[in-house]
Image (cartoon, rainbow, N blue to C red; front, side, top):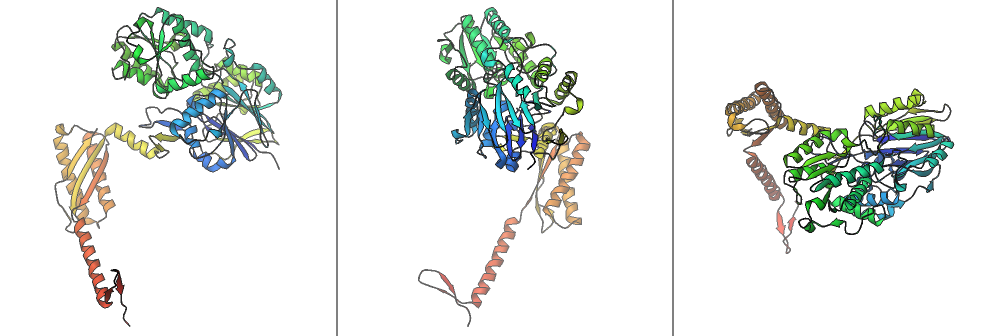
Length: 594
């Protein structure tokens, strides 16, 4: 049998987050990461976005495992929804697996612990036609790993989120020797992180970041409120170290933060000096100049919580004069506006703001130089830039060409693309696509909100809704009562009485016209009212609200009563024709004619 090797881009390109890729070797599929992304302002009411679950519906019996690179939501966030329906083994480092369990059990308390398997950088897992091994990488969370899939065509290497930092602590350091070993095996394809490809300046060493945080704490005159992602453990450790050095105590807020910190402490990934942490009840008795409040917010996102503090709506903390808000997480481009709005609210409340990202060039992702260095080490035959918006993928491509790769061997893909390897011609080519759409999570609904619903929500947010209610008697072909109209988010009714009166007259005219010229049909009469109102309202206001016609019939009960009476009459006739007797149990017995 001829070997088959495919690389599937399930999610995580031309966007930020929601990483999920797969490598197929003959009849086995290896899924690499299973992340989510948080919705932007265009996804009205959506809580989370995850990859297309139809992939598991179609290929689930071939998936032998999900292999995780690290414990951030963009790598593990889709697991609760996948494991809810499919019992697929999950492999990751010790910390990654513990964080994955926390994430899964938040949504699915019945998930089997036996599905989770802890591996490390020295682990190699043998499958029928492929082997999976791992290598340590530097990221903002310890125990991050890259993944190497050994196939009959060569190595397929997936970096996950990574960067190079020679000064990183041992638990965060990339193993360059291991990368050199992989390079000797012939790297077929490299799937490499593109998130920070535009950066021309090198990332500041984490040791320098730690010193900077300590100086910020030392110079602050009042409380320091730190906003950070709960899973950014390297930053959490630097905050704890700075607080200890400057004689401050730390209050942790947010359930996610407490769970993650406890887990990391129990595994030895966070060092917390005795007496450093305090409870809410200790806050009043601790001087402001001795206080650090570490805020991560719901699901690890701190900005909404900061806004609540500034608006005096937070359950525990209110920002007041003299507070310093230290935004310790470098925000992505998509939330820069929210950061600016949050800073404005903090200043209005009397506080001041320092952003780490403005003072220091820091990121958990590889710069352009890092990407070129990785290409130089691994010397891949093909490059597939992943994890990043489209422009970042293109920048990564240009960097790779300057590093010596051939243009035709670099693939800018989209979600759902599938690349197959031709052993005879030694080339990758696009083949039949795989499921690559978004699955949207809204409350408890998974995938039940599609483009049509989102389009309706967008229209409602733009121009509101206009409701028309009318009662008719279709037998007499007349309107029984004056139509009622109302609106929400469209116009202020008291100031637009004439518009409402004209709308009512239009409804009456439309329905009467329908009675006179058409055979009665519920769908058609509602459609006529909707069409005429939409045209009229746009002509008067240049707005297009959602028009919702409600047509009711006054004689519905009477029609039902007549049908019921007719049915009884028919039954009486039948019983007259077939005499009825009643036995001792009360059952009716029909005596048929002889």
